[in-house]
Length: 270
Length: 304
Image (cartoon, rainbow over all chains, first blue to last red; front, side, top):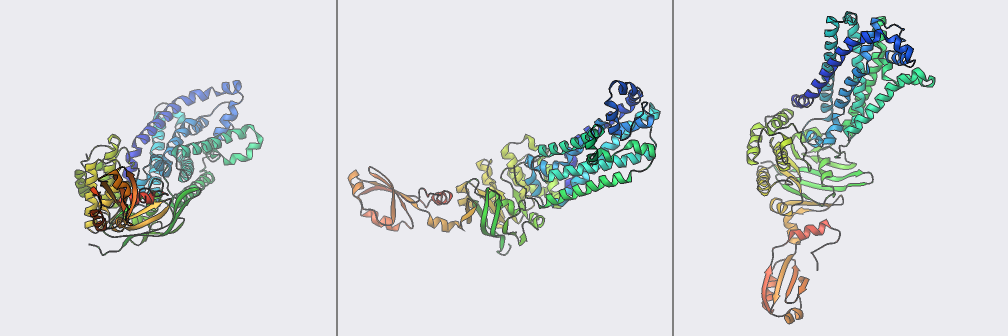
């Protein structure tokens, strides 16, 4: 276990640092600029009629013509750059085993060691969860620092922040588990990343499509954003137990199936 | 010294890859303390067999056991006793030998650094040079050191000498011989017939996914023909000669004839004394001819 953890640390320390600093910067900047931009959002709504449904799709609630401080906070958590950074890290991480190892030809060396595939999978999972926590916490740190010092209306209550974090982390688990599942069937890392990102993008766009096209509405349930609604959490103050449950359910199923496939599949060279 | 027992037992093993050729109904037994050569042309199924042994591939049918453990269901237990060098060595670019010995030792839960560094010295490796800066030969040497550093009961080496210079090939041969002397087993695939001849007592030859020969190298040697070159005193003598039954004419040019002969040379010498011969050259039995016969569909160089 120690050796495998050391290997993961050596391999991911720089990407994790890079993504952590990136998310810190993104969330700091968004915390700084969003109140100003969203304060004048009514002008955008008037000028571009499509803009309002897009924001509504992102937030999951219909924004008023004037953005409240709560909505501004919520917008920070669903901003595409925030989600892209977190997902970028985890899709790259979760396709390391087995697709990445097979792709770079190191799988023979790794599997030549006396370690079961399930153990490898568990250690990788541990690294994925810890690295995700580090990156998300780095983002929160950036947000809190700027909010505390300069933009008091963007300062969330600890309870609300924790609930949104739980929701965001359950999205992280669902997406990462899906990437593990795709990777477990793949011999090529780029292909695994491509497939995961395509499905993720489709799921993301489905959420927007449902706002404009009635037949797509029932399919919106397939969108990951359907289960991640910080605006509702901030407004109601309730823990999104059902959404978190659904996301964790997806995560557990994908992760387990991925592990079973990895443990039973034949590993060929490419 | 361990009692002689089967370290590898393969019975009726088949691995099918759909339309691609895999291996079919392979049977092998490798005893402890042996250096076992596994030969075959490219794509014959050597690496597939090795990957089944290591539990990378699940067999379609049949069984493969190492030290009594099933290679698929008990692969983790199997790999504890095995050191493996793959045919196409790829290591992590950030790995140095020092780090690798620590990492592999931690995974194997045993300190392999001392023996690893001894091996590194024998193979002239720099312990702190990262893999990304190493030549192919040095990467091969690192893989060999990592495979042997924990003193495995069985070393499975897939073309281990490829990329090594002759001196390092000798160093590896010494390591393999030492393992065998200690009662440990080496199973290695190779294309280099001379190293197989000098190292192995047992060989198996695989072609098109099936074992075409599996026996002691001495038995193969008995099947190998000697090449005899005879020079007659004149072209007329060469043309008039009546060849005895125990030789086969391979080629003939003016005064010179090249023959293939099985068995001992005594009969030939007895026959040649009565012939108008000015020179005779009898080479030792050529295993290469036997291997070539097994490698190719049409035997070459074995019969005239």
